[in-house]
Amino acid sequence: MAAYYVGTVRVTDACAWEIYVSQVGATISQYGGRVLFRGTRHDEANAGGFGDDWRIVTLHFDSREAAKRWHGSPEYQRLVPLRDAGAEVELLLYQG
Image (tube, rainbow, N blue to C red; front, side):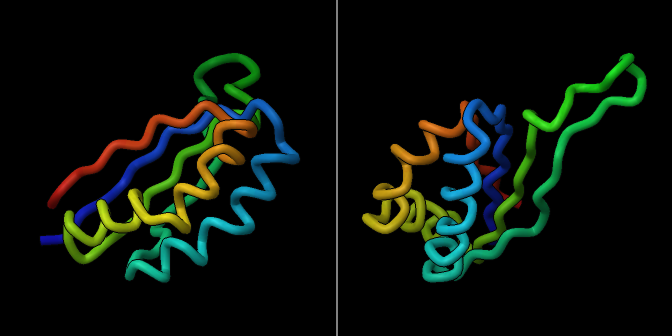
């Protein structure tokens, strides 16, 4: 059964975040995953919206096991300090 990581991201250092984003895709595909959606959060109902510092990302993997292998992999874990330097991230795994 497919598995999806959904990440809510508040960018705190745009430069560090962009470096992370430029490298993380290769680790995802290496473990059979792909980015389904990546976007910037805006709420037109609130004056001014949330701004460009809020992001969302959805990753697809063929199974929960594959998703967990990616997340625990040395390739991804090497990028976690860079990710954390650039953003506050909540990454949740869903199966469906």
